[in-house]
Length: 297
Image (cartoon, rainbow, N blue to C red):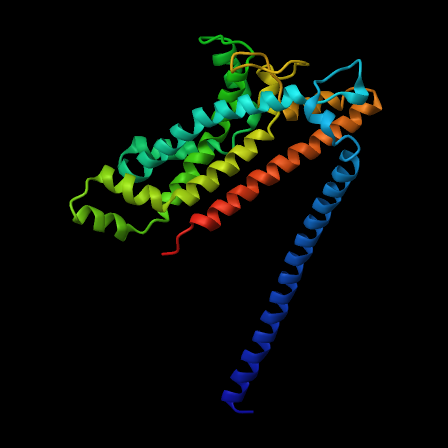
């Protein structure tokens, strides 16, 4: 065997060995995906089969009642969720988007305080959600503001929770806009604010909207921070504003599963199904907005 034939045989053997390893690794990835999908489908099938028993008009139209469990509903939790999420949107979206615009378009990355702010924002994403509830309890429910256990406190807790996510996703959407668009706008005499407002933001609206909706869909399913700020009470009336006592769907589920009557267990499953449908609708809206307004450069 010549030297050239020996090198060719060795290369072919190494390539076959590499192909076998790639096939094994790909098989393991597919197996992990199949196991995850199996668990997800099992959970969804159980929730649907158990939740359809009480998924009727009483679920939305009636108030919670321990005296009439067969016709009890979660209307107060639905209205409480709407008020809390409305306050979260007002508090988190403008502040998060404005902070992202400043950090991405105006901040000087050579300054140490800007790098410190970016580092803290990235670290806040990994903070346990209950910490935001403790912080809101100390400074909003009690402490300096002392607004009490009202819907506004829940909005503040959830706004603090999703604020880092909104900032990071908005920055990524702004960063996806090509630098040439900014340079061309500035070269034509536009100011930096005009460039940001008329060129960069319209081009990144799909990414901003998608990230914001996904952040809100995470907030609507959170229970841990709201338990600490007063959402654990058994509310039987709809809140009329952000300064009323409230409960939300995740906390209502937490309360229902602790009750002994079997009717409350069925009601809990139906409430879980309702919450999943809301989350799927919000995620579907995010996907539609991304596909509808996405620009390819």
